[in-house]
Amino acid sequence: MVYLLIVRYGSEAERKRFEYLIEKWEELLSIEKPGGAIVLIDGRIDYVMKFLEELYSRIPRNEVMVYKLVEPDIHITPLTLEAEIRSGMSVNEVWGALGLLVAKLRAVLISETGGSRVYQVSTKGGSCRIKFSVVPHRGGSVITLTVEGFGSVVSNVYNKLLKELSLIGEVIRRE
Image 1 (cartoon, rainbow, N blue to C red):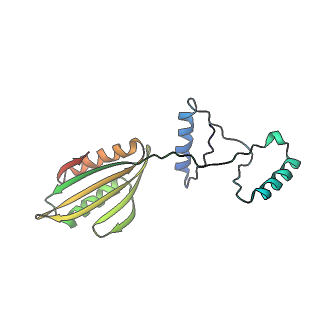
Image 2: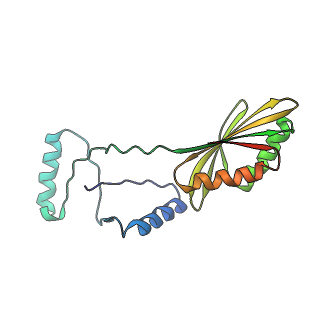
Image 3: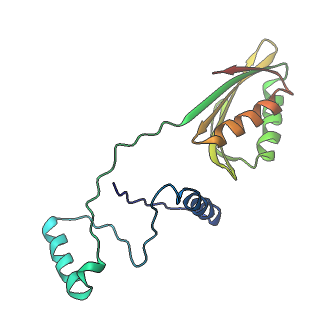
């Protein structure tokens, strides 16, 4: 089965990550980056047929490949790792420590609501999302950590975070 993959990257770093994956998998998969133009056409079939007829009059038929695209039934569930950290630090102190930690990871704040913040982290191994929720608890606070994404980057970032967070409190993993 042949699949058409359209990857839109927003930066040079994402393009390089994509190129690396192609190189990594090209021995196991037949991957072709065709020359020429790749276009997606959506419209009434009679207009598509007229377009193709005119195209064939200008470019030899054997140089044009036409495929009907149907989205495959491929569902990959993101990996989600969670932990709870109980700290004797106040909520404000915890947010200060977390601010230093996310700066160290070069994480980008995506959203903030109430006692929760969601960050995007990009590494050489890929990217994932980190969510911190902090609530007061018995003179200290409880941090709920969630790391979500695809591939080994999730466990790498999760383990790095747990190592750092163990310095501010007791880590309770949720498997």
